[in-house]
Length: 412
Image (cartoon, rainbow, N blue to C red; front, side, top):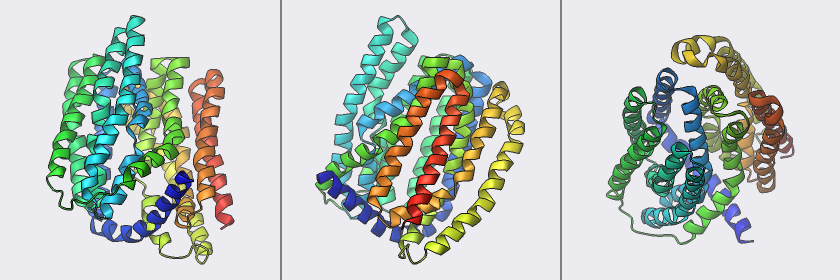
């Protein structure tokens, strides 16, 4: 019952919060768009460095470690970031302190599991992975906590500061990592540089943010709220990270690297298309039932953009790959098939409508059924079809998710 009440509170807050979201999005629109484009270019530069100067097998191991970190970070309560946005928006700025304390405390659980994995690899004389996960265990609670300055500024509706901090963090982290990639193929040093640089930069920006706190109020329910939000997103987070781990187990590090150079560019491109962020505030202003036909017309028209966009990236893919990722030409065909994901962009508009209407039951079904199907398909298809199996699983789960969203939208 408590969880149900928290979810209801979250959805009610989402509706109220997104009504004002368009205001600060308009004010900080330049920084919002500029920030994401620049971060995309920074990540592209880092990928290019890896493609030119880093062995495939070692890069595959690096991506495996990052995927494991993504799963272990669940214990650092990522839902607390969303809860902090809400509570800061309500004026309780001082809640950043208990949120950080709670994230570190729970993050120590993930850290402990990371150390166990480290000892397991060391026991089996795999010293490279053993020491790498030792580094993970040491840094994880802090690296997943100190970035709370980003949701803090989002809650303050200061998109400009949030974007500047995010750009600065990613730029300086890349500026530190890329020379190391050029100078060495040492996975341990790469992992240490990644964590040490980001954690140090986050600590500086976090401390800078703490100096800006004006309101000293606190809100007790924020902590439990953040825990509940983490629980809701756990299966989705797990499904989004498990793909490379399964490939690692069945196909090895080289296949992880080849798949990563197909999947990561698509993931970055999707982040540049803000359908949900733009649609939620607008849709929340009115009763969805009254504008349902208009929404569906816009949904249909969006395919006039998403289909050509998908075809565009399919056709041009070989050219940037030959320039930027010449050692990963075998990733092109996987990228081209994954680019079909972009066709499903319009379904985000219908998904935003479900959130605006606070369709709790339907959202629960979508958020649990889709990642569950994806995980099952991963386990079934990858052993038989390798990378094609995982790509098929992603596309099937996308179609399934789109079907569910469309079905529930029509029932509004």
